[in-house]
Image (cartoon, rainbow, N blue to C red):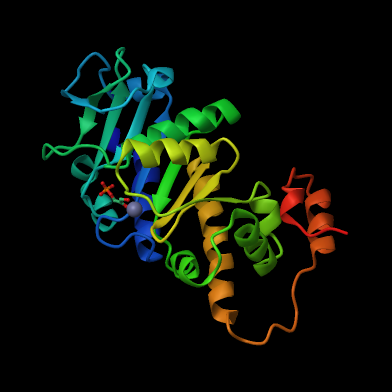
Length: 272
Ligand code: 13P
Ligand code: ZN
């Protein structure tokens, strides 16, 4: 059996959480990541018949039965993951009943998966239906996007349009736009269900006055998605209140989307 600390998925979790912390997106225990793993690959590092303990999830995740995820722990700080992955991360498998997580590794101090596990697992279910290659769901509290929540209308079309205007490549990186949920109590099945519903159409979902969810086929793509949205929000916050002299025109966004061959939300543009 190989040493799990040499597994690329553990390294990716360590590096990504450290990057997110350094970018200021994950203060204290803010943020969480779940990453769908390949069973055969995990089997090179862990005896998959050995369950450390069972943790009830409180929701039904039948489509994910047997699937294995590496996930950040609740109350754990992203800043500490790199130094102690076995305490701050866990590897869980969804049991046959669909409502229990079998702990295969990690959460060494008796901890458990993120309180946002419903939003993560429900988002995986929604994204896997839209794209069978989807593997990562990421939540964080990016500073500028959060600031923008207080000064910009939280309408999906309007918010997406403003973000697309802020950097030339935005419409190419998130052509499906940005979904928005109103403020809701976090850590509940309800916010999980609402997030998953949005995830059918969007890979980025803003939780009003809280943060953002992103989904993608790998860690780079998902991180890059949130990074691009946050960069656009940063440009917005740097220019908000200043006289606007130039902007990217809607016709130019169409040119970009067509040139890069992406399917974009035409209804979010104001085309003549
Ligand atoms: P956890 O510590 O349970 O992952 O919660 C952090 C968070 O960002 C809640 O939305
Ligand atoms: Zn949060």
